[in-house]
Length: 136
Length: 134
View 1: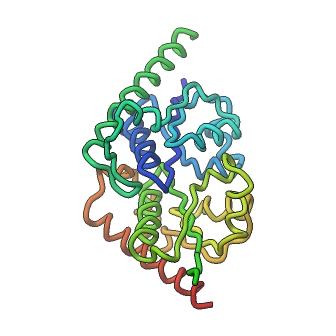
View 2 (view 1 turned 30 degrees about the vertical axis):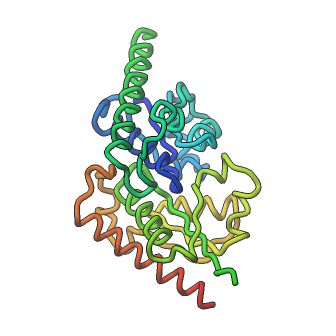
View 3 (view 1 turned 45 degrees about the vertical axis):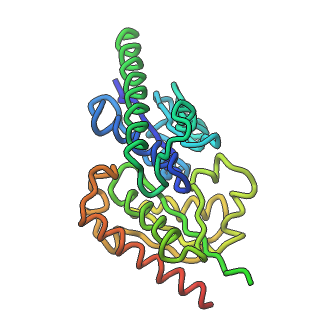
């Protein structure tokens, strides 16, 4: 069984890019390190064969900050099977008016939203692993 | 009079410490050290974005900032947008072992890592200033 790839946009311009990055890292480093791993999105963007091999025909979850959906589009472009697409902007809708921080540093509220999103992603990782196991 | 603008494009690699340092150093240059002269772009917009994003290196002289010798930011810029004016590879100044460390989350950064951010930001500024002086 190959691990689930959790790939974030890491958008540099806004807090939402940092939140996407941190949510993905929370999953791969802390919540599901044995079954999930991340891949440098910049490496995927280069189009190198080695980079494609890291995602092509493999189960991936993308985490984007904004509607540009850079991670989802880039992973699909490289042949990854995107099983779920998360967007921080969607999470922010249930936290209207909250100051999450900046692209450099998050506030306590920003980290709280990151943790909530990471729990959702980890739940999806577990679901995909169960499906994979039940399919033999 | 409009200030001259330089594009600084970071790899922001998610697999290693160097990506985090590259990202933070680029943000520090943009926000604090050279706020009037530096613009940036999310690198994957070369694929997800439109013509405007792919014209980035034609619109601005670009400095690529990469964590490791894969040089993803540099190579992606050359592939999708145009030539880079200058480049910085953090493993050259911080060492390969350091940049490939698995401490990546901002939660885990310590003072020593922020010193690396400062060092990388200084190197970016040297390159920005050189282009501005041309």
